[in-house]
Each structure stands twice: as C-alpha cells, then as structure tokens.
Length: 106
Image (spheres, one colour):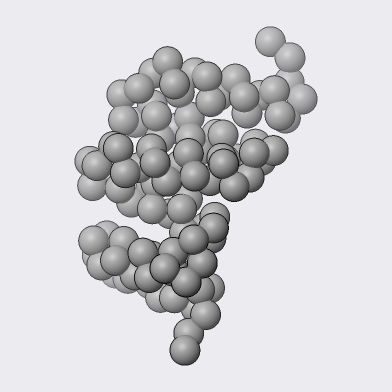
C-alpha cells in the first residue's frame, strides 16, 4: 500500500499534467491516510483557489496554520489565499501574523 507521501507525489504529477480536479481527488486520498499532512493541505488550498472554490481553499490554508502555528510560510500562504479569494481584511491579519512570527516590527 502506498504511503501518504507517495500518494502526494502522485497528486503532484497529476497536477503537473494539468488535471487539478484529479490532483484534488488524489490529495484527498492522502488526507484519508494522514489527516494532518500539511503539504497536502497547502496544495489543496492553492488548487481550490485556482478552481475558484474559495471556501475550500481557505479551509485548507487555515488547517496548515492550525497544524503549524509558528510557521511564517503557513501564515503567508493563508494571507495570499485570503487575498486571492477577495477577503482583504483577513489577508491583512494573516500577513501581520507572518510578520510577527518572522520578527519584523510594524
């Protein structure tokens, strides 16, 4: 049986072939095995955003932050996803958190 990481790698190949819905389906297989697989949640956030499904995109970006609360990139990605989904205030909040974690002062 393939591991979560092996299935994730398959999903990336499917995405690279231009099949975002297929990649999403494969990534959901990863989450069935390993619900806390952060790379999968990060990829799903991007893919759902590209498919104009903002609620799902935001849900997965928020999950990355939940799983990695001290990760600057997690908050940066959340900010970008919020921005691309038209949620500017939330984007600014996430950006501020990323700056705070990276040690920048306002």
